[in-house]
Amino acid sequence: MSFRTLRVSLVALALSASLAACVSAPPPVVAPVDTTTPAQRMAAVEAAAGPDDKEVSVAPLRDPQVDDLRQSAHAQRQAGDLAAAAAHLDQALGLVAEDPAVLQERAEIALLQGQWAPAEQFAHQALQLGSKTGPLCRRHWATIEQARLARGEKENAVSAHAQIASCTVPPIMRY
Image 1 (cartoon, rainbow, N blue to C red):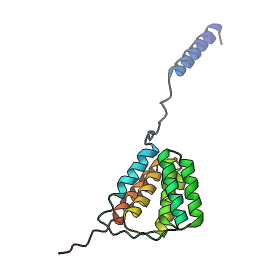
Image 2 (cartoon, one colour):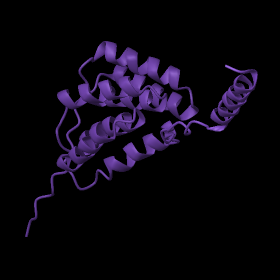
Image 3 (cartoon, one colour):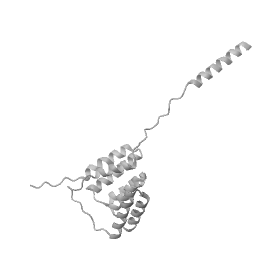
């Protein structure tokens, strides 16, 4: 191989290497970022519950100590101290582990804290133990829906959303 052929080959190689460097890889596909805040998710849960004035709602008798803990948790939530609210509700659950209302309140605190999996777990527990109709039932399913949406599980969230309607029993029409 002559010096000239070698030089032409090296120039061609350098040129092709520099052209290859100019070719850029396609930009990576970035999944859309969900910007829904925990407070917005909680507002969706509250909206799904709807008004309670047209449905029969049965409320069990409550232990006064549990009621005090629930009220303290509510006050802490209003004050923005979600950790204290969670602690009060955890204490209440230590007394009445199978109370659907307390479990739902705990699920909502977890939702507000951005703890998606625990929020769904508490809401599922409440759903298993509680009434299958009424505003509390709708809150359970809406919490499950929001937790799934937050985790990007859109198909599962759609199925949870569909369950919300099954919680509403139309009133008896009397003439």
